[in-house]
Image 1 (cartoon, rainbow, N blue to C red):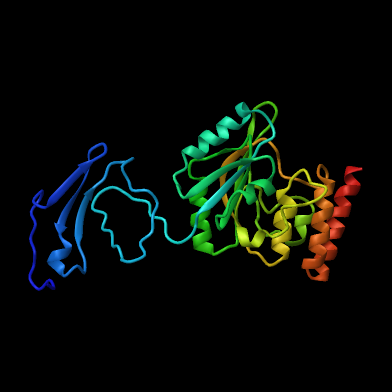
Image 2: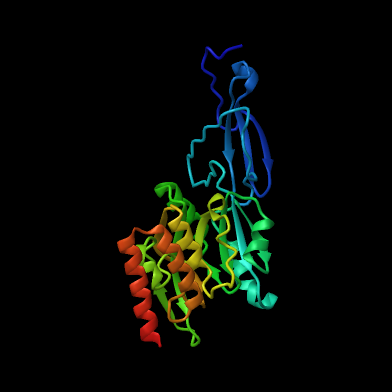
Length: 282
């Protein structure tokens, strides 16, 4: 029958199930007490005993956190993390170990010999590409997802900790949307949360540039995608972003993309800046 009178269930007085490493849930109000309309459960949950990622299709769920914190995944923000492998498993190990420590859990990892192969093996609406020597911070994915939710951007990139041959590290950040200056060097980003539906044919560039992310993100920007970059270094990487000096193939692809996408004054500025940079290199 409908719940017309208050129901008082004292501490530990409801039906209780204990499981895992000390977790328990206690039924404070059973469905039959409320005409099967709703129920109330007190859940004491220890880390590691949380339920797997799931959805509710027939009922609503309201959570009141009395102590501690929880992470909830809302919507379809599942991510395919594609790690491109070129060397030995030993080189790959730090990257995979770091991914196991991600605070964001709604993702799958695919190790592939190319980005195209990795994309074919997944179906999540969002994609992150990593190189085998990358070492992501534990909050890489959670930060990118939160930035995407806040900005509604199509692409979210982050800063890098670049490691040189001597093992020295320096921080590198990106502007996200550099307009014509994107022809001089990759100022869009490298590690990025990408909308799969936006990718299209941008990942299959022939001949492949050294920095595949440079023309990829320039092409996405030219197609109307909005790119933002989080000013936090969230990945340790050994390869630096491409420039006209060290990645002429990538620069030529980017210039062609910008010529079609930018208004003529900016497109002309992009060609001029790239030409000056190449002339200085030679």
